[in-house]
Amino acid sequence: MKIETVDFFYFAMPEVTTDADGSQDALIVRVSAGGHIGWGECEAAPLPSIAAFICPMSHGACRPVAASVLGQKLEGPDDIARISALVARDSMDLLQAPHTLSGIEMALWDLLGRRRDEPVWKMLGYKRSEPKIPYASLLFGNTPEETLERGRKARADGFGAAKFGWGPIGTGSVKADADQFAAAREGIGPDAHLMVDVGQIFGEDIDAASQRLAGLDAARVLWFEEPFFGSAYEAYAALAGMKSKVRLAGGEAAHNVAMARHLMDYGKVGHIQIDCGRIGGIGPSKIVADLAVERGITYVNHTFTTHLALSASLQAYAGIADDRICEYPAAPRPLALAVAENPILRDGNGEICAPERPGLGVDVDLPALKPYLVDAEIKVGNQTLYRTPRID
Image (cartoon, rainbow, N blue to C red):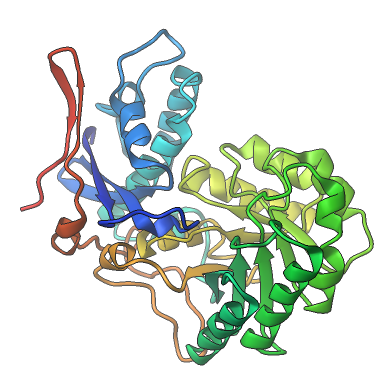
C-alpha cells in the first residue's frame, strides 16, 4: 500500500495562556493508506509544524516533509524507518521537520498495527506490555500552599508518584524553592515518588542549580529534571558529579537520537526522558530506550498532553520491566481530555500499560474535538497549500 493522504487537525482552547501547559492546543495527524487510517500527534506549535509539511522547497536539502511522505510505500516497519531517513536527508535544513515527522511517524505505526491487528509494542519486538507506575504531572503552585494542595489532591486521586514542574522555581530565592519542594513532599506523602522539573530555568548556570540540591535532597526528590538547556551537556555533567542523592533527568528537548545519546554519555543523566512527538516518533524513541538499557540508565516517557500521545510515548519501553515510572497527564485541559474515545485508565493497583489493542490502541474522537478546531489557511501567491480539514 502507498501513503495517500496526511491531514493535520489544529485544535486549541478558546484562550491560550502563558502557563507551561502543552495541553492548551494540539496538532493531531491522520494518515491514510490502502483503506486504513492511523493517528498521531505532533508535540510542537501547530502552525509551524503544518507549514513544514507543505512549504515550498527552498533547495534540495530544504524540501517540505510532504515530498518524502506522500506516495511512499508502507508495508512494514522498515518502510517507516526509510521514510524517516528520507525526511532527515531532504529536509535537513527545515528545523521544524522532526516535530512534523513525529506525528506522522506515530500515525504510520498506528496504521500498520491496525492493518496487522497487533499493537505497536509487539511490532517493536516486545513479548508483553509491562505495567508502569504513572506519576501525576503537575505544575508548581504560585505559593507553597498551592503546591501542597495540588500534592494532596494527587494523593487523594490515587497517585503514588508525582512530578511538580516550572511555576516560580528558579525565579526567586533558594529558600523559596526549598519551601516549594518541601510542600510538594508533604502533599504527595512520605512514601510516594517525587520528581521536580525546572524547565531549563538555569540555562548553563551550574552554581545556581547546585544551590537547589540541598532542598531537593531534603525533600527526597528522585530526579531533578532539565535544570539546563537541552544541549548543555557540560553543565549536566558538572552537576551530576556533585554530592547529592538526586539524579538528573532530561531528554525531552532531543530532536534526534544523537542528542539523546550525548545527554546520556556526556551529560551523565540518570533518567533519559524522550518525547516521541519531538524526537521523530516511536522508532527513534525505541532506539534510545535500547541505548539506555545498555548504559544502565532509566528510560522514562515524556508527555503532558493527550492519551494518544501517552500511548505513543509508552510503546518504546512498553516491554522493559525494570523501567517502571511513566509520565501521566493528571490535569490536562478539556481539549486534551476530548481527544481519546478510550483513554488509558489506571487499574486497581494504580498502574497502566500500553494498550493491547491494535496499533496505538487509542481512537480519536473527532466529533468531541470539533468545538476546538481552529480555522486556518496557509496560502502562497494564489495557491492554497493548507486549509483546515472538515469534521462532519
